Image 1 (tube, rainbow, N blue to C red):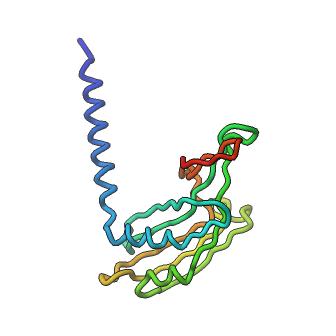
Image 2 (image 1 turned 45 degrees about the vertical axis):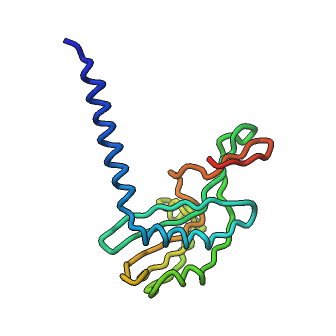
Image 3 (image 1 turned 180 degrees about the vertical axis):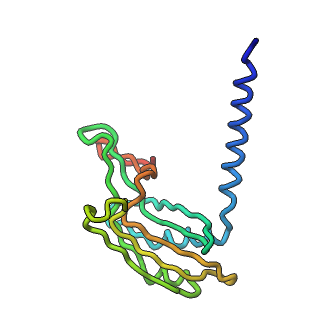
Length: 165
């Protein structure tokens, strides 16, 4: 008996998965995309350039958005594969202007990673409130470093050349 139908079934399953993943991407409403784009403008890398990464999800309490500047990964040379985060300033006052009403605004600092080993970030800012005329509930976090599972934003080569990853 031939098993030539197995690759076809696998291909059909891959198409189903691709279609499902693609439809998930369109779940994010336009107002949220605009909010993310506007918040990204408040990052100012201290040296060179940066690329803003984000993660967002809808919860029972509203939308949660995490923003960060991506890492630079070294390609080739003595430190091949190593990466470093991007130093930056962030306009906090500007961020508050994106909210119609702010219900909380806090900063968590965890410089002693020995005590909180289950956390991957060293510190982050969190702001919660309502956004837009429809008063959508949003919690936005600005992370000092990107999550470990995110790909680098840039590749840097031994000759100093940098390019988007």
